[in-house]
Length: 263
Image (tube, rainbow, N blue to C red; front, top):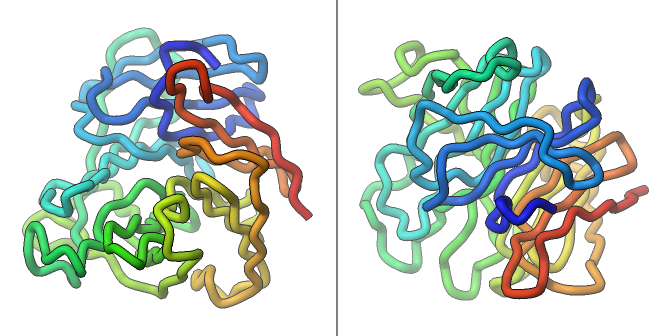
């Protein structure tokens, strides 16, 4: 992949362009890149927003783009935000204005909470049927692979269904991959037809199917192990059987876009 994307933290397949929208993690410029299958940058867009801790990217059925600025390593942020980019603005050359949805986890009472309750980091989400689905990243020792599934209304603003301008996240369920650090959830996506969900960590992907409603953990779960462990933080469905995964570049390793075939 392009060297400028050495800290890639989000990827979203765009069927129209047959290419991928990508972004970098915190500490980088607020830029969005359109990248071809061959790793060539086709477009670079500047957002009129700060990259506090951008962690994932998704799109809705109208091809509007959303950026999850909700990285929360220390569990102390009170400004968890989802940025919206209108589809029509993706094809201009000027700095892009965004609209913001801020949200909160009602179960979190302290900022930060005690170490044994630090469940409120997140690096993975997608938009589906008018809601954002967020998969948290645990910082709790012995529970690193535990993720909580929350839903947040995609209201278009933070006034409707909100408290003090923030939308309340609704807890649906939780799932545990394993207890190790390599099992922390770093990316997520849902297939175009909404029948499969993928969760990513550094050593594997999990595919969920045959679930009921939006409790994605209520159906079948299958793990696919990678042949190597790297800082994989981005995943997207290209179609129902092919997913694409990107990892961060570290020294002479990583910085690649992988294809992965699932059942």
